[in-house]
Length: 306
Image 1 (tube, rainbow, N blue to C red):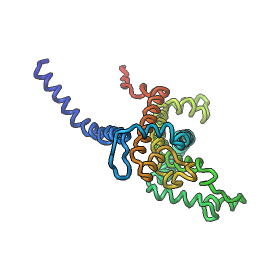
Image 2 (image 1 turned 90 degrees about the vertical axis):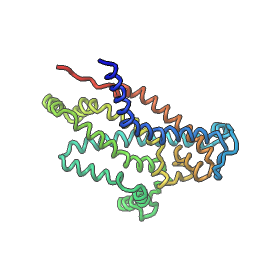
Image 3 (image 1 turned 60 degrees about the vertical axis):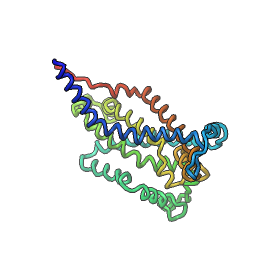
Image 4 (image 1 turned 90 degrees about the horizontal axis):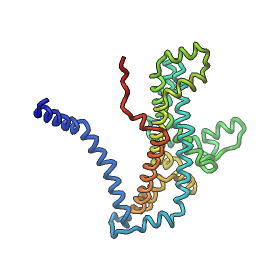
């Protein structure tokens, strides 16, 4: 191969890189890397409502680790919220929905999935208003109407079981993503495996345990990682439904950062708290990468040669 041809190939590779990966790299730099850099810079200042940085200081970090009495509580609530929503809904319930809808006739399963996706497609405010009506602590609330019909006393879910409320509210809408991913993965499993298992006398649960779950191991790992990181930084529905109350009982860490920065006007301290959230997210990513063996998921595909 001549030197000119090699030079042309390298030039073509660089051009293809700029055309196909250039926009993605630019977006990654603008919306992921630069915000972290700005956050680090602001965290070492005394920026407040005036948006003026007066001096370089470590006071925000000293305050966060020694004087913020709500920090530990918000971290604990965040752990409960993420673990509860992930374990009971985003992965487990999403998997159950996928298994049930793929077992139904095609049209019935498709209709059920479409109905379940409606909250995901509706505006967040509409979803929050529906929950506000459902949990109304008076006899007008949907849940209390059902309870009264069954002879059960009126329940104030927001004040008596606030963590259960935000886990269920976020879980019902979060399970839809797992449902779609798992449904696609289940349908990609070769049909002859199911036929062979049933011919050998395997029941439905054994087929799921020995064929379906091993075959969709990687989609389950992906949903676990993705939803964990998503839940760490999400607070939209919590903010709309409970506003972090009562008495900070549903104030997860991301919502706490928002309140400190934008409601209290403590932008520098909010940036410091956000920086800790970045560290937590990176640490969680590395742990899940290790224990879920995500490296094997991203390895180059093997090509069988016959």
